[in-house]
Amino acid sequence: MAEPESNDLEHQTVPKVITFLSSLLERVAESNDNSRRFQPQKISVFQGLTRPTISIRSYLERIFKYANCSPSCFVVAYVYLDRFVQMQPSLPINSFNVHRLLITSVLVSAKFMDDMFYNNAYYAKVGGISTVEMNLLEVDFLFGLGFQLNVTPATFHTYCCFLQREMWMQSPVQHLAEPSLNIGRPLKIHCCFNEDEPSHHQQLTV
Image: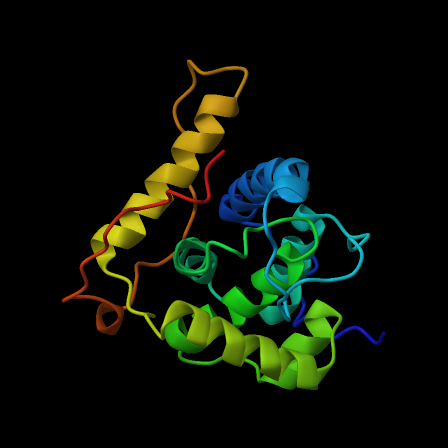
């Protein structure tokens, strides 16, 4: 597969949110993989027949490298993933669907968050899927979310803090100061207000 243009991001530092989010999702996927045989699984366009060979962290780094979306998009994508699994309890995140869920959540987040973003065909190349599949995944994800895309600043901050706390708790040297996510810029004002977030990160925890 031909690589999308990277816009000279080869030497750009990967933000810590990528590391934090990938670590969390790896644990969630592993936990759900172990209990997969005991849970009813809904047939979904997100579910692959085999596990992708690329790791979750490498996949997220690839998305960051080529999609050129803001680091904030990955936090909002995390919010969307959490909402999705809460609204679709028969589709828990596991090793067979996490990659498709990731590329789709980042695509939707970038469209909602950023002033400029790439089209679905480009994201399909980044994600290693066809444009037709990318389009289907986006539609299915939006309906799975009930089109609930607004994210308040308070919700954004809550998820940032949760990611930081999760990594800090895993750190072998806990006396050090908690790491910064290096988001870069705050949530855009039009993405907020009048949203009642019921319960945060109930499903994306192990």
